[in-house]
Length: 261
Image 1 (cartoon, helix red, strand yellow):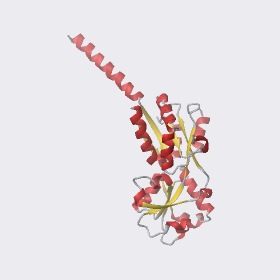
Image 2 (cartoon, helix red, strand yellow):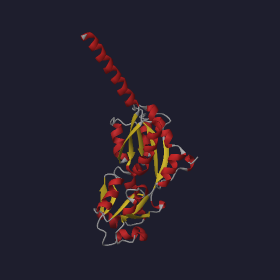
Image 3 (cartoon, helix red, strand yellow):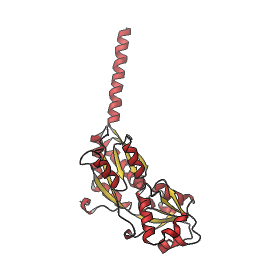
């Protein structure tokens, strides 16, 4: 009887082991630039409903994720807010060959609370207003949107005048949250976050001319270290569908001309 019980127990454990492996095989981890959050939450929801797989997403700055991936962080895909980091990973043979995909171009805006007395329609001039004490941007040391913000301020020839007012968020999402919380009077954030359903009614924004800063071209790669490359490639393929492109456009992203088909 004891032998039979042991056999039954062993069989049950084996079944559970196979089940756990099967569940693991149907899950991927994604590292994504914070500007993607509003759109990606919708995209992931649709993909999960269609595939039955689970997609776990971590949001942050592209530069920080780049360093983590180089150090072996267990992500399956990387959605970067610029092209440099995915290309560097590709050059280091850390990506699945052929998985590099340029999915969108981001845009930056001036952001204030909806109840602010500042006239956002004046554009960058409001940053020189004496009532503006703090201006939030993403940390330009590792966040592409922060680098774009600095470039725009330099193009407008006001960077030196406003630099003492700048406060850095860890990523573009935190920069936007400083405005929402009142920790900053004005922020330079992504258009995608300004259009987010959770934010839209709470803010007013003015789109910064795209000629004021280098293009925020964004790309994704599947990582060679992925344990679920097949599912990761499936998700990236879904990202190239018309359905997803329409979602990205709704959140203010510009789709590269070569990928609009």
